[in-house]
Image 1 (cartoon, one colour):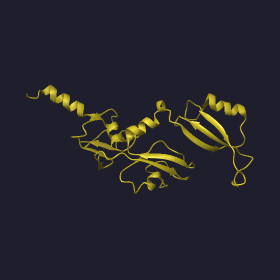
Image 2 (cartoon, rainbow, N blue to C red):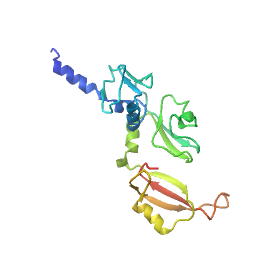
Image 3 (cartoon, helix red, strand yellow):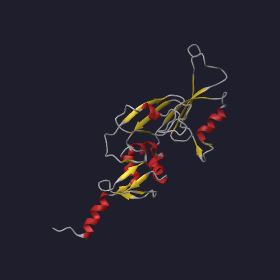
Image 4 (cartoon, one colour):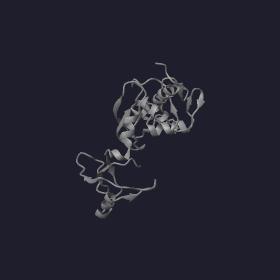
Length: 211
């Protein structure tokens, strides 16, 4: 049976995917990170820079280049548990030349990126992956993936201040955030010389990716 013009168009449209979704699937970054890469003009499609976030491409026929490097085919999904040390940037690059999590991933057979972030002076678990869809699900607020922190407070909080964390507090970034659990940690002063009666340690569990 001959292929009609409309049938050809339909086949082409089913092969097309959103550019940010494709970049995430190929392990370039999460979808949010892909949007940033596109808007900054780091992606070309068939030789032309693309800035439109919702643009669709054909991964089988379009020539897609990211930051001068041709987009590779999909590799095996990687999921890496990495303990980020203090004084390390949760980023793949840093214009100031500081140590990043990427510096610890040189032996990984493929490009991975961090899901979420930990601050410069924080340490703990970071998941590194090349699975953009997985990263997007983990970071989406609807997933409510819990994040547990041990934090050293300046002084000793009152019960009413702890209660505020459960009800929600305003933050500089805007909006309100609240804790799922706030629990005091007992420090063994005989084993921990840094333990002090002037500062309290608390375990705080949250689900929102806020600073």
